[in-house]
Image (cartoon, rainbow, N blue to C red):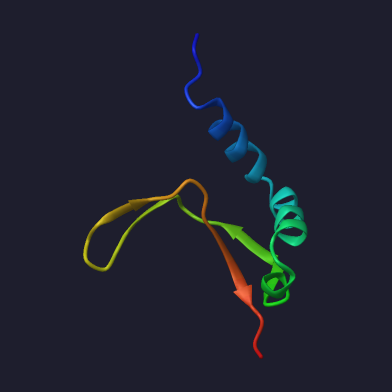
Length: 70
């Protein structure tokens, strides 16, 4: 059996775990971005949605996060 896109599947499987995603964001995004978000509020989102002009959009991974008020 041939697995299509094995790297993509591994990436999605890995980042579905919130702790892994939180660590990745904390350590690999630029510090000025990490300082502006609350990584404890990371929440996975649905991977497809409809825009206001009714176009269907797909994403590999999508997360919602709270932004700190200045």
